[in-house]
Image (cartoon, rainbow, N blue to C red; front, side):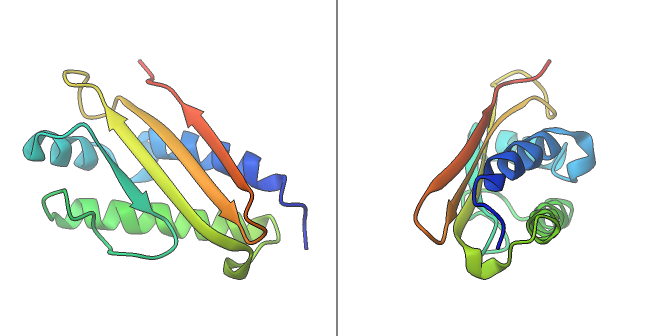
Length: 126
């Protein structure tokens, strides 16, 4: 099994991907936030509901969330890990009130099977 320290890099890489337009989350996540009058939510990358309860349901957003979960699984496998090596993984996205649908700060937190947390915080991008 690879070193759990690799999960820090995975958290960073996934955070950068989540901020990019290629993630499938944008602009759908920003639109959902604006519609629900909230500025952030938490997405469970391992299990849980396919759509956050605090956001309105939309097919493009559901597909974006599914895509980011698949990307996480692929990145995990590429580093030699399996789902059994992870207790939890969450992606927290925050949007500014008037920053548009693509401006998000993200935090990725991965808890390994040994209980250690590996995380990355990426601020707002312009």
